[in-house]
Image (cartoon, rainbow, N blue to C red; front, side, top):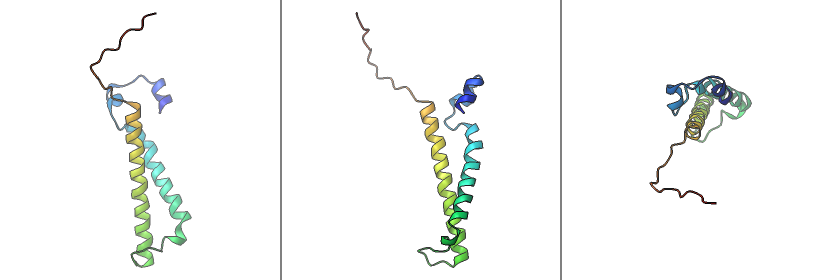
Length: 101
């Protein structure tokens, strides 16, 4: 996304947003791919749980929990990337003295 920013002139609406709309094209497929990968890799163990649910329900619940967890992680990545990309300046009101040489 940084390379794209350097190639294209900044647009006021995109530059001022905390959640960059271009990030959705990266986060959504990434979340779905990670969820699918973990469901496939953990398929034999998805039927176990601590709630005593039947195996079919346990697999469904565990898959949904992974999707929710990865979605929250993806939203966190987008949010904190936006904070790092657009830091807010804090005015302290103190003047910095000029350096005299």
